[in-house]
Structures are given as structure tokens and as C-alpha cells.
Image (tube, rainbow, N blue to C red; front, side, top):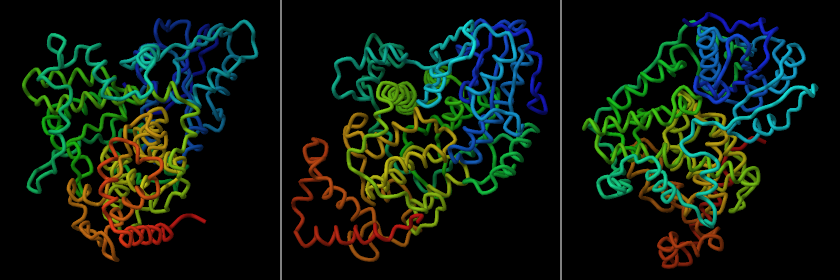
Amino acid sequence: MISDSPERTTTGENAQTLRLILTDQLSRSISALDGIDARADLVLMVESPDDAGHIPHHRQKLVLMLSAMRHFASSLRSEGIRVEYMPLDDPQTPTSFPEALDRIVARDPVTQVIATEPQSWQPAEQLHAWRPQRSDLSIEIREDGRFLCSRERFSRWMDGRSTPRLEHFYHHMRRETGWLMEDGHPEGGRWNYDVQNRKRLPSESSVPARVAFRPDKVTLEVIALIRRRFPTRFGELAPASFAWAVTREQAFLALQEFVDQRLPSFGTYQDAMRAGNPFLFHSLLSPYINLGLLTPTEVCEAALTTYRDDQAPLNAVEGFLRQILGWREYVRGIYQLSMPAYARTNFLDATRPLPTFYWTGDTDLACLREAIQSTTQNAYAHHIQRLMVTGNFALLAGLSPADVEEWYLAVYADAYEWVELPNTHGMALFADGGMLASKPYAASGAYIHRMSDFCRSCVYDPKAKLGVNACPFNYLYWNFLIAHRTQLQHNPRMALPYRTLDRMSSPYVHAVTDEAEAFLRRLPTDP
């Protein structure tokens, strides 16, 4: 049963072990809770003002995090576990979890603190730097066992690899798990069915409605709190607009709806985009996996069961599996091994400030407007909108990696730095020089036109290369290649576009750079 309010527990007087649960550790199987003694232990959960205020999170993301935390605390209490819950709207709540730890160990006869290693750099540094005033208190930091590849295993796989690649890691993980394998070989004879997963969605195709969860009393209280505390923060927030799952039970319903209704078509149309349809056949499960309401293992196994029951084709299940077993684990491993230096790399020397339309959606480029307005409304845009629309524009325009990464971290419901930063820094912006991706994911307007219907409502013509009606992605793409020839021309995967560039006349090349520079000078930015 869900309690109506996040009441503060005050019965920790006899607690001997204090167990810390962070915002994205809402799993009953989290290692910090292993072996818990309901009679002698106390769980600490903090709605940190630092977390809510330091990053300008989308208001729906804040509601999702806080409501899920409050529901998780209630589920622990229903087991008889004592929870010290410090809500955001209590003026006595410390500003950070280290301060909350200080308060509890000063108050109670705690002899041990147990925590699960945070995945993102800053909270991990805070936890490792925390030192209690008392010398008799021990600290145990456990590995997060929810991932499919441990840090040690990823480090062993990386050993000796100068250019690690997702595909090689993915093959390794398929062999390790045995998923979609037959006698040591990939099921169907191929590791990757991505060539079947790039179709444009036909105009007559219908799309299943998103599974939506009506806010309960706890969530409504959080919505009211966030609207009151952050009235001008980015993102739409009204009871009618909030549809995210906030409990494990609801997240399981979302998982079942995906594998039943959308997984069969997910693979074929996973790269497609359609105006007014931001979700298409995507799962929308990443916020729940990253929070801890679902585990990657159970999500992958649900998809595999659907395949074994002949309810979804191999290309769809393999494509979905590759995102979780392959890409999610891969970017987490790169992040853990490479931070904090990784975030400071800027291979392309990109420094232009983030245009204001990333926050407002006020742009005449229909594809950007569609992706940003969807993000404003839902705290969500699928991976092609992120990579090939907002990310592609940021790459071509030379936007500052730090500015772009702050935006991605703030606006998406599933964004936590350990997963957001490598995706944005390495995949979208190529700021790491090719550690994560083998080439920059740069594209002209032709790609967006091929994979979406956005161009129909745009003032620009995706087929026009130059002139007032030309799609800016077209001349920005060639200007990008011209500007970064020194860094990119020796990349084997860039050989074809550079051969095409070499066939262009000198006057045309000058016209491209002139129009690109004029467009970039007009970008609206905050003073």
C-alpha cells in the first residue's frame, strides 16, 4: 500500500547499520540492501536540493524521480524496514546526501554505513570523499550488480584495445550471456540486423498509443511541489501531461505493453521519425531501467521470450537487445574507465554557445522544432531525434560540448551523466576524437528527409543546396567537412564524402562556407 506522504522516520535510535539509497537506485535487489536486518538497520533516502537545483532538470523528470523515490520508500516500509526519508519540501532536509549521512551518524549509534557505488562521477566522488567524524564507523561501498558487465570484466575486455568498438563488445556479451546464440554462433547467422532496421514509416501505418499512468495522490503532491518550487523551469507539467510509471508494478506493465504491442515493429522502424508521433514503436523503458524500477536482465529476457514465442521477428529483438546488452553497457564501461578526463576532451575545438531555441523550440527548422517541442512536452525524444536532429545540428554548428551535454542531461527523463555524457560527447559530437564512435555522425538534410515527414512542414527545401530556401543542414554539412578536414580526412569511413568534396568547384565551396558562416552568425544565443 502506498502512503500518502513521504513522512520522515524518527525511529532510528537503535540503528546499527545505515544503508544509503540514491535517486537512481530504486531496486529491491540493489546491493546496498543485500542482507538487510529490518530490526537493526535504517535506510536513508534524500531528496537532495542540490540534485534538484544544480541541474535544470525537466520538471517531468523531477516528478518522476521524486515520486518513484517516495513510492519505493513506502514499499520498503511495507516490509517492516525503517526508512529515514528526507523530502525536498522539508526546510530541514540537508542540501546533499553527504550532509544527510553526517546528520544520521551524529544522531544514532551507527557502526556501519553501506552504500552502492554511484554510477555518475560527482556522486561517486562525494561518497568516496565522505569521512565521518567518528573513528569507530566503517564504510562499505558495494558494486552495483544491476549491470550485465561488471567494471572489472569491462576493464579486462578493454585491456590492450587501442580502438574499442561497440560491435566487438556486443559480440563478447552475446557469447557471455548466450542470448540469441546457437552452438556458439549468432542466431540466424548474423550478429547484427541493422540493415533491416532503417525503413521510413509509411504514411498509412498506425502507431500504438503510449501506455499512460494516471498520477496517484503521491505523484499529484510531487507535481504540485515541483510546479510551486520551479515555476519557470523547462518542461510542461500538469497532471494530464504526466504519464510516466512511478512504481515497479507500473514499469512492468509498461514493459509488457512494449513487448506485446510495439516490439514486433520496433526493429524495422526504429530509425523512423514522424511529426506528431514522438514515441512510434520505441519502448520508453530507459527511464525505468536507469532509475532501477526495472533491471536490464528482465527487460532483455522479456524481449527474448517474445521472440521464442514467435511474437516478434529476429531483427526487432536483436536490435532491442543490442541497445541494452551492447550499447548501454558499452557506454557505461567507457565512462567508468575514462572519467573525468573524458569530459574535458574537445577534438573538434567546438566552442559556439547553445542556441536559445534548444530551450524554447522557437526555430523555423521543422525537424529541430519537432524534436525540441516533443522534449518539452514529454521529457523524451527517441534516439534518432537525439542523434541525427538535435545532436547532428550541434555537431555541424560546432556547439560547445559542455553546453550541449548540460542540455541533454537536463531535459530527458532517462538522462544520468554516466549514460548521457558518453552518448552526447562521443556519439553525437565526436568530441572524444573517435574513442566511442568510428566516425562523426554528420548528415545533410537528405537523411532527415528520407527518415521523416518533417520536411513537409518546413520553410526550407531539403533538396536545395544553396540559397535562401536551402536546408541549412545541407551547407552546414559540407562546411563541417571543410572546416575539419585536418582532423577527419584520414578517417577511412570519411573517405567517400571527402572524395565528393574534392570534386566540387572552388566557387561552390566558397559559396557553401559563406552561407554556413552567415547562418551560424545569426544563431540566437543568450547574451
